[in-house]
Image (cartoon, rainbow over all chains, first blue to last red; front, side, top):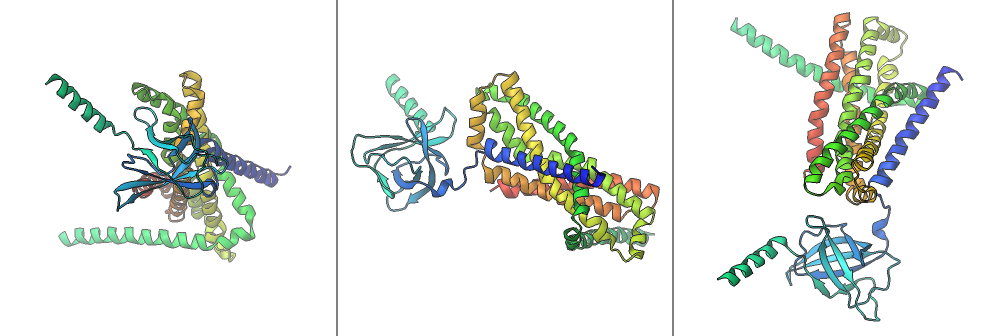
Length: 155
Length: 260
């Protein structure tokens, strides 16, 4: 193998290693999900307080992720937060009396939407709305209420 | 006497402006020479070999150690909050966003940039560049363009290798030695590291640094005083200027990408 040829082989190997590293970063480190946002169907839920819920936060049922938060908007007429959920295509049996909560993963973790299925036989379809919701727990409010209650007991 | 000092000050300022102008003109001329490497791609492979393949070892080993140090340091801080499961997120984001592009750029400036400057400075000192011109070969297109594009192409790949090896180093220390949960390390990392926001922005950064490092190295070599002392001071300036500009531009890019 002459020298020129050798250089080209080495450069080819270098390119391959570099692209492999990029692939590793994309797949293993960031778990890139191509076209994830165009699949599945949309549901909306209204919360009186969405806390610090972020776009792309997970939507879970029974602790398993079944979708992601697509948008968090504000309804200026009712002063509520409108959260748009993108549910994975395979999950098409969500009852229409499902309960949506905003939970926090761990004490300081990120917020996510947890769905608890109801008993209804009617299922939600694209564009459907979840009416039973419970707002995010705001830590400061809870501490405030706790202190207020304690003060009431002792006084 | 006072007028002389004023004149000298003005002269220095004009010199600096002139150098800046020459640097940009040289950059434009090198980029416009892109037709040359399309006609002779072999020139480009040789330069990617010089910058990329020969820097592979130092970049890989540095990445491994930086990742291992991040694993150790991050563990001790995170363990105080009971959040050692987030070690993977910490190691991966700091590598992909900052340390990968920046440290790779500094390493390449020292390893490849200095040799580019010395090579071109020596070509100028031994009048090889003038000889090329005598033969009606444009030295900018023939010598500088392949080196510029070689550096620009090699840098993002080197940064990606640095980050990937670093994540593995952090994994080895965190999971292998300190006992962080294997699944939590990877799943938290995958949940929190975003492809567009983190990895793509890191790539854009390293692409910009590739332009800066090779451009500074080429200009310092091409613009050096053609003597032994001139080439040696140009080599020093090449590394110092490249490092300073990389760190400054890194701040600006970080503010643009993650500040909003």
